[in-house]
Image 1 (cartoon, rainbow, N blue to C red):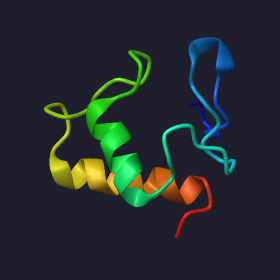
Image 2 (image 1 turned 180 degrees about the vertical axis):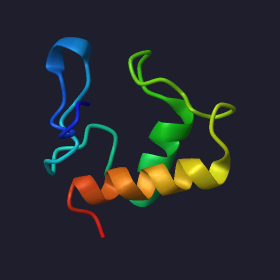
Image 3 (image 1 turned 90 degrees about the vertical axis):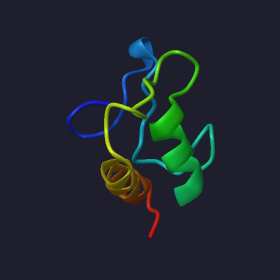
Length: 68
């Protein structure tokens, strides 16, 4: 998603700083995306990161899009 999390459409990486979220922007949906990946572009992090790290990452990403 790049240093500023603005995305890279050519790579299939969406902008994480806008309110448009293809797979939902709730904390639970962000955790699911980080855990399971999406459409072969977003890698699944389950088994590569522990659950606490996945939840921390999801909180961070959720905040990028304006979530609280």
